[in-house]
Length: 192
Image (cartoon, rainbow, N blue to C red; front, side, top):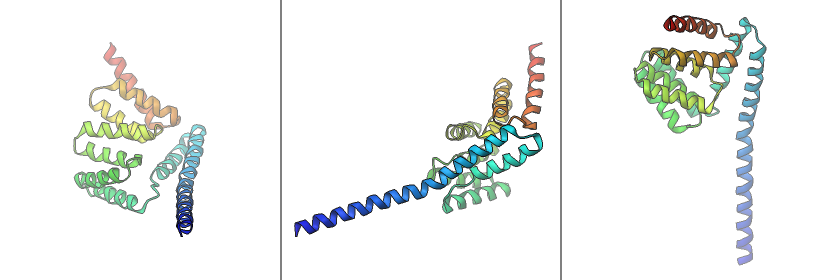
């Protein structure tokens, strides 16, 4: 009898291991595919002309938005709807719930940073943008947001550095080029 119980226990353990492997492989495939797709898009971005750059940026942003979870997608949609409705405080609640449920999902922090910024909570906005960049160092949108904040804090040199970082990722960004030219002129004027 003990032999049968041990054998059933081993079979159960084996089934648990197989199930865990299937789940891990099943959930990791889209992430690998997403990473491969993003790598391809970023390579295309390096070779793109100014007209194509915007379209590729949009594709990258769309890839970043794919959470793979219906509940996270729902929180994201509700938060974005609240921002569109001019209710950053309600958006903040949705994005905070999203970050609590998916702390590795950079887009949750990015959108929560936007809510904080609109509520004039600059410190938390900067912290969340830092979280985005720690999870996704190529997040040019977070860099843009941080550059805007640095300028508002009268730190144009840091803003200039951020726009230069964007150009490393998006060489044909007309916005980054314009901001770099403007900040160069501003900083040269301050030096005189």
